Image (cartoon, rainbow, N blue to C red):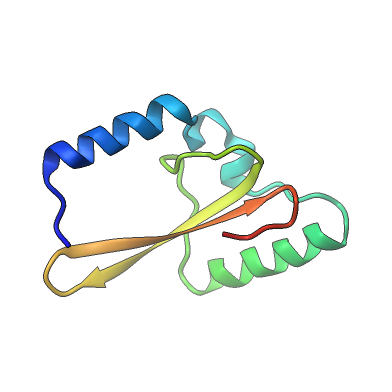
Length: 95
């Protein structure tokens, strides 16, 4: 689905005014996991995704409670590219 530029700008503005981006929270870009069992499992999964081509980015919006985030670009035949965003949260959730 191709998005219209105005729709993209509106979504970006909404997100940027509600949430900080990775450049403002470098510990989230680097992935700082808690020193407990849940944090160790999250770190293992984070490292596995990185080995599969996921990358850190300073441009990802940071949501409340997020402790790490990575993205991977996916080629789409008609529309160019799309992205998977994987976010890790301090309560153990991976989204």
